[in-house]
Length: 201
Image 1: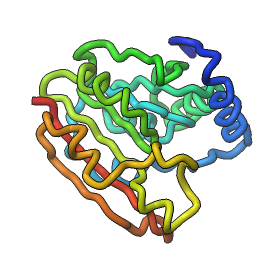
Image 2 (image 1 turned 90 degrees about the vertical axis):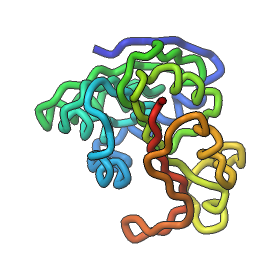
Image 3 (image 1 turned 120 degrees about the vertical axis):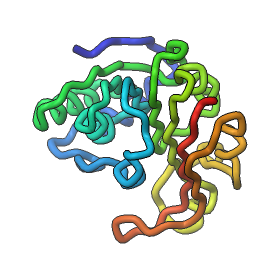
Image 4 (image 1 turned 60 degrees about the vertical axis):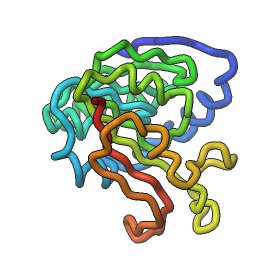
């Protein structure tokens, strides 16, 4: 079942864009999880997880396969439908939340883990912090400004890229368990990203 969290006329274009991106038979970003998530899954506390901007569910399904109880939130109904299909395909269950993440409210101290990959809304950061249990962790990865110089991937507008050390500053009140920032090779391509795992004190 897809649960509708909140609707906004301001995001019709986002819904249309992502529904268009996900409407094909295949998976736009593949079925394999984000490499950073896959590599550092051992640093993440088991329990209840929230995957923000979950898309077609590759990361949410990977978490479910590794013993997490997963909520997957996204603006695209088509993406979440495919996420459910992928979960069924591999024999796990995820809960999907159809949500405008500009308005989405994360329940206080509900999650052991919150994942955020390649979606930057700075207004979400306080909600992520509030939504984590004490000792819970956030795993976060997205583009830094250097990406605009080395590749065509990523958003069009500068405000959707992290500035130098910005991700560290955004989580300065958390205990950082892992951090990297720079240009890395992934799947034969170079990407400029910041990646973080941090724990709520």
